[in-house]
Length: 383
Image (cartoon, rainbow, N blue to C red; front, side, top):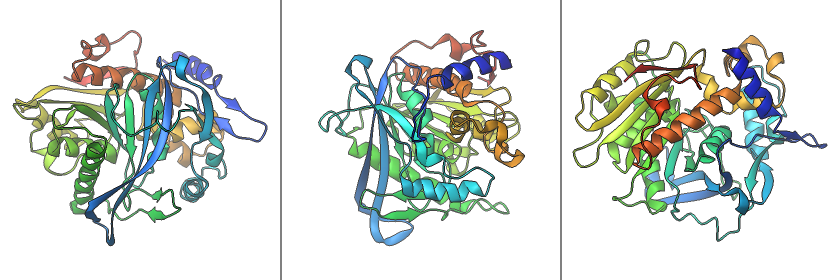
């Protein structure tokens, strides 16, 4: 199984570039579209920040939109701001990753005018994205760009005081680490954070002009996958969701998704050793999904030999910078043994196919129905 992975990695890395000043461009998505990117601050004046009542809730979002190649003038933009890169250097340095690399990363995007980059709804289906606990949204831009290249508008949301660092356009910085991981069976802190994330996502959808009659989709990695299910429980504008390897918490473990008027669909995407058999929270969530009359599609997938860190951008960054072979055992455990390229290729095919099917835009793709010769390392564990 490794040969296709290595060939795909070589092909992908050949599409990256490194300039004389040491910056390097992350690869383009494989879909038929190029992508534009915009960052914006959104302010919810109706809510005080739940972690700091001295100010209203402020959010930072990023938005990737699909662009026909003929309409795209390509530019390179920084992957991280210098301030965020500095913070991530400090955090990741504690796990044996080298410092000074991430600020040199660049994204290849389309240069769009201000009018073209309004926050209004567009024709492409909209997918919301939520990242892991204490993890900046910016560390999922490469994967999300891959998804967007297949014809989806994807909106990434940071959750201040939960996300490790959130930098605003005026230079304000809010640090995270306010959410305590479960201890001795007490998960109240993470359950509270999930409810806040659900409020954040619903507010962003309101700001985008998504009405009660509209249907969008959502996915997330790690804690963001748990947030996806929580958002769906509260906001039926979310037609379908994907949890990429995130433990579940809270009411979704025993409260059904969907309703008679608004059925919902869900895809669990685990990693090697993390599935509905090994994780009791996934097992409980699965039984609740399958017991609901209002969940019209539910399946569980995994990739052979994948790990929790396979699906965040650090996996891509260590490949593009060429440092994977020099990583310590500790650092390698954060990204796993599989290069990013095959992971991006798989998720870039399966997630958009699921979303377009759930939204009624396409029939169910064969890759969602059973084993695929094209993707032999993808397993369907439950359906």
